[in-house]
Length: 494
Image (cartoon, rainbow, N blue to C red):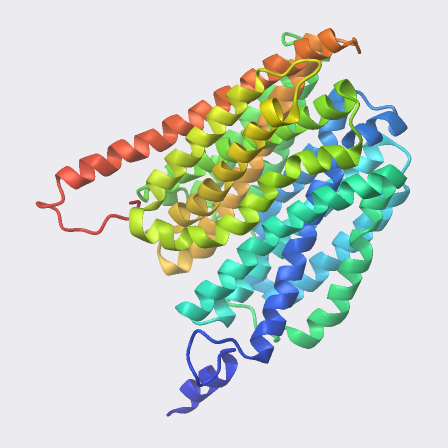
């Protein structure tokens, strides 16, 4: 055995008994990375449950309230690609630790703010920090655990942790909101500090994979982030300012101009944030569009569902959390088991079935009224959404990285994560605009329903678009099967 192979053997966290067994150092590394992902899921769901309380305490309008969610999504989605690139250029461990410290500081700041804009700013910073921790954590896993059973097991545990954090956040968010919504911002602080204390002792030091000089696409990151901000602001502000107002038109035109400039920059810069040719890989574009629809319609639904249960039905924050919990439990249990099923039947059918579950669930929720039964009206939708997420979320991530060269796997992973966050921000903006325009300032059950139902119509329509995208994948798969005999090349999206 030569020196390099000896070093490799000592660096891989597996025992001599077999490549599917993790040693103590491997488990500790995975535990820290899962803790960071758990923290992200916990934070997102806790704040979602606390939205009505935040609205009342800070006297926010519905259109402003959605920015508490969109601020996080925009910081995350807008900087995610740059975060992955930073981990390569500055080192994954260093990037992870700095971003986690920023997350903790933003959580402390958000706990004590007394105005909507400052709260939104803290959420944006937290989303931006997560844009650096997420790709750094994932790349540490893929470079620490060798390809095969050990890595698959690690990734399965890692994926389940995110869903578990989201589910736990629903319960904790409901409990903490009954005391005060600020505790939902405070709880992540001790968890983040504990992880910061342990991580430097567990995570191995790593060297940057390439020289950093001149490799940061700062212009691309700035353009795509400001384009997203302008787009979401223009759509969400339109019901108040008017769709033909100068303010709305300027925002939407700015979004188009900035987006066009981003494409031009990516075509010319030496080290682009996104190599646009990646979309020519079969299935990548389709997977990203499905990911946008999947997460966009769910974020819009959760926003409406939370307001419906608490404002119209008068449920407590804890009661609302428990109503959503079955979906999270289904995802936490089923998502880690989808990998084997995708190997047998392919990702495309799973995405299609998942989108059917989404469309059916949202359509059923259109039956809501002023006095529904949970078992007959709400629970069927929640269960279908759990099934949809369990099937679709792992599958779009697999499909978006299948057939991509090894040196672009990080880019492909960051791209699908960006699409997920962009879909959430955009659809939530449209849903909020429709709800605000239709319900006006009324607080009666009838006026609230007048706003919620059209918003749910938008959510359902987006899910239908996602289903159409998946159906096009099935059609492509059928065409491939017909020509399989004459073209023996492997299917990269089946």
